Length: 77
Image 1 (spheres, rainbow, N blue to C red):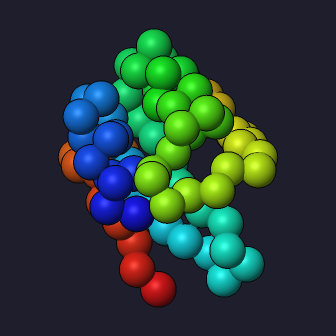
Image 2 (cartoon, rainbow, N blue to C red):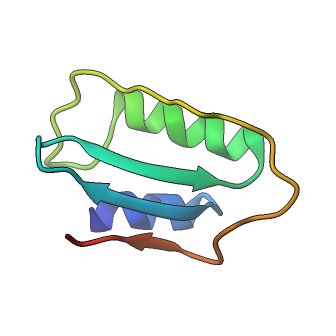
Image 3 (cartoon, one colour):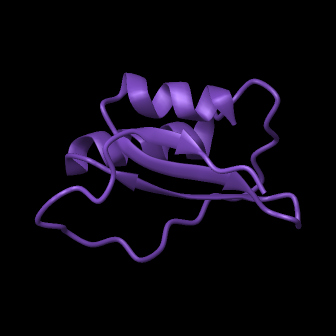
């Protein structure tokens, strides 16, 4: 999770990420659409060193007027 957080910050994004009980990852990315798209591609193809990517889904994409977050954080259960 920390690698994901660091990558999001490096790309100038804000939002959150967390592991789920079923072993997947969920989160929210906010920032310029080009940076969000680049992060999505990174998640589809690379991910963190210990991740095993079998599928990447992105839902509820929309344009927002202002950011809901000020940083990129890891949510722990």
